[in-house]
Length: 266
Image (tube, rainbow, N blue to C red; front, side):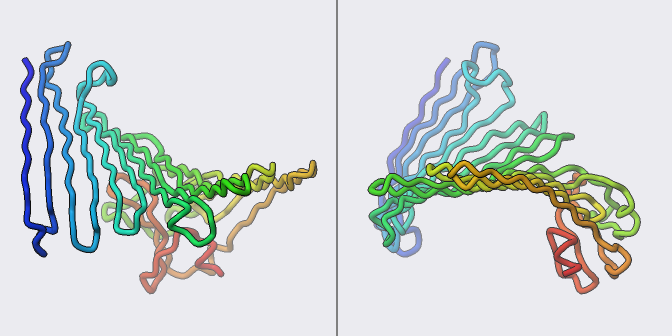
């Protein structure tokens, strides 16, 4: 059984909605395993400050592409007021607790004054009981000069012990050599230049870094750094987590939040 629905709406572009036209389709069908599958797509055009914006959304559980019938996927894409193209997608499974999303924005060269085409984005993946993973990145491309560069930061966040309200006094947990975050920060280009930092941060504020530098002319430098804190000089610092026990930030006695204990000491 297949069920199709389609709609088309025209608007006057009033200040309230700024919509000119909206249309879309919905599709529902019974999959191979007898589960109901859903997919929908719609397109909206706006006026006003944004001359036009295209938005496409999908919600689907496709038995040919996804083996878990509880998985829901989606996509959105469009063009914003500045002429930049953007795209987002996600995957969610409410049963297993899996959640992954990514987003990307592209700014074309004719919109910039430096001749570069730019892209930037981020993705994040979560699943119950496992470390969180993600990446933030930017890319620049200059076609006329045959030049490309990319900066990225991949990170992993681990579950830590927490109190009922998601905040614990630092002295109750700081003596444990527990890893709270790790990652890889990297800059590279198509001239064979590479700078990378692999880093780990522990609950007691200690940081460990491995640095790789390749200048693109055959010289490679390796460096290893480690830094520890004197916890006793940090007054009334709390560790804050979300309701699942994942690290959020450190908080000092004034309520100021920090992503690293190193920032509090400095």
